[in-house]
Length: 202
Ligand SMILES: [Zn+2]
Image 1 (cartoon, rainbow, N blue to C red):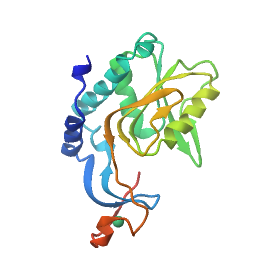
Image 2: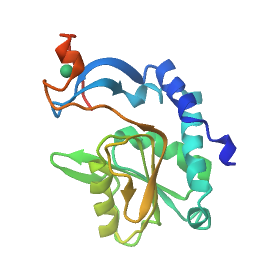
Image 3: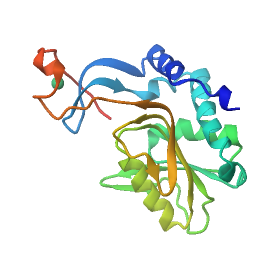
């Protein structure tokens, strides 16, 4: 089963081919500069690609006996809209019973579904990309308020500067990526070469 998980290189090729991974001189909303930008929804616009990525991630959970023994009474949870296609794909591959997703409303993150305490199965948190880990940490707090344990967490891509654990579980990913984020100006090699910048959204 483990052999069926595509390598990090293979996943990066998919992300390049679909336009989800770009190289250039990017400025993120937090002011940081990076030569790399991921726009993950571009990979998830193709059904076949979305399926390959979600199934691959699901296998990282399936091999964990603590997780597989609790299936199908598991909920798959996305912290934001970007993770929704990942959550549906992973849910499908694992035949998990529930799916939930959260949204940012003003400065607060909430679940899109109105849920009561005790209704949420033990959960696996998934996202398309984990840049800092803030979104999954905020969602973890929501899940805990609802009384559900986090039994797994993963993303298609995780920046190596981001958190690598959630609750007591490791964050699994198909690609561990060093985004080479620079605080504005001085350290950015593209700025030194006067390469025009492109401002991007998260
Ligand atoms: Zn720069």
